[in-house]
Length: 298
Image (cartoon, rainbow, N blue to C red; front, side, top):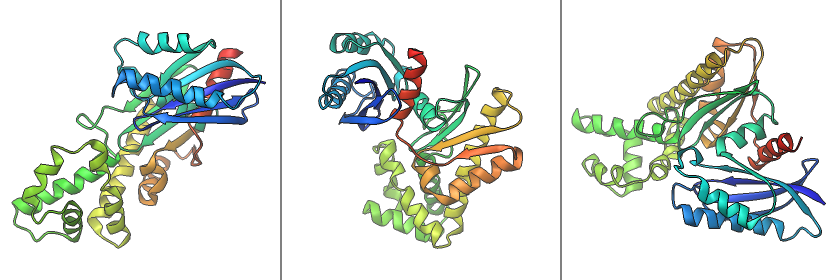
């Protein structure tokens, strides 16, 4: 059996999936994080482990290509470490790209279009006739508007305003304090300046709960998140000088799981460009590796 392997290496786990040459899933392997910026040596070991687990159940097979999409790969100063390790461990040719590129290929089935991602962070990536443009993806200090981190921080900032201006804490603020185990907003700095981005973003479901109950501030944050993500996406359309029909795919828990954010995002884009087709289904990013690998093989 001839097959290719797709690898999605993120900040939490690495997923390796084998596909036959028709794009059917054969087997998979799971290991720890694959983001080289966290710990390069450990990430490489995890990536190799996931691929080995994926290959183990396949009998009498021949791997024609390995495509890897790794979080943070663009920030790696010297990629020779991962390349050397892969060359030593496996005989098949391989390609390494950023994880957003394989997600783009997966959702758009290897075709041109735009992918907007909003999870803990946010970024929009567009590809048209071999030209790649992006907007966002600057990280939580420089940007990431519309991301889970950004949404949560709007609530935390509002809490500081309530404290400074002497207002009674809102129900949202009280819920956040209760989750933190704090009695006063004055204690908030202990959490904010020691928490990871993911820990801060974990407060988004609480904001969504209050929005569903009718809290205007929470609803406004989510609507604003959709607006920021739409603006980011429209910038990519401008950069690529696209006119006519444009296909936009979405990925990430904020855009796919929060209706208020998604509807705000779609409505703002449609207002500016009615000729847009949206891809709202979710598929494994490793499928993008299949499309990329098949292009290399051809």
